[in-house]
Length: 93
Image (cartoon, rainbow, N blue to C red; front, side, top):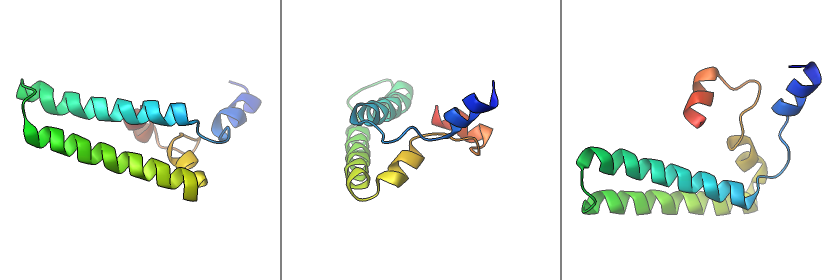
């Protein structure tokens, strides 16, 4: 990879799109549901549904608040950069 390409990859490309943000939120919520319901082997677990809804509500609230009040922080937290540790990149994907 050339130095120019590395600089472009490391630099944030501007504002996070709402579609990208929403798809990330849905992926996290779906992943959480799989991690909770797959080991349980059932979908009628009320506490898990309550936790998923509360967590999804928090994520949505934060995304809306941050996009309005601190978009720089939202952009920084939604992207990886050159100084992001390799184990952190694995977790983020």
